[in-house]
Length: 169
Image (cartoon, rainbow, N blue to C red; front, side, top):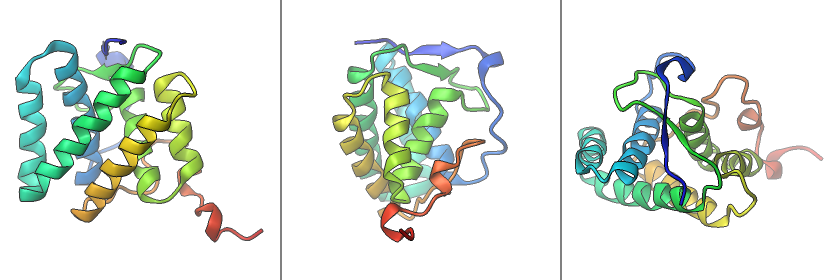
């Protein structure tokens, strides 16, 4: 299993203000949960729980459970060192942005973008377990009215495309 490494503050790319709560929850949840896996420090998981429960109330239980399964699957299957920003960093780094974009793509039925995010995050083509976890987490967030915008990252055009079934042939 690969360990997550903290991205240097200088490597955190500025992604704009994190105005929407769903984006913030997914990004911070990914960061806190991965940090908790790496360090074994329960306070990281408690921070994730507080962030989710403050916004989602009772629905946080299912969301945090799905978050845990998804991030754990990513951690187990990744073939490269995952990079995360420091816990208190006010920006998201590349891998955090990929995680956010993956959930956004799931929520907006952008399968090619979601699979591309999974491949980039894992560094291998064995993505099915991570895709299943992402789909479950994305659905739970949607059911709790926590829908991410279609395109989070700068220059991410795949998420802005209509689903293949809705496109004209």
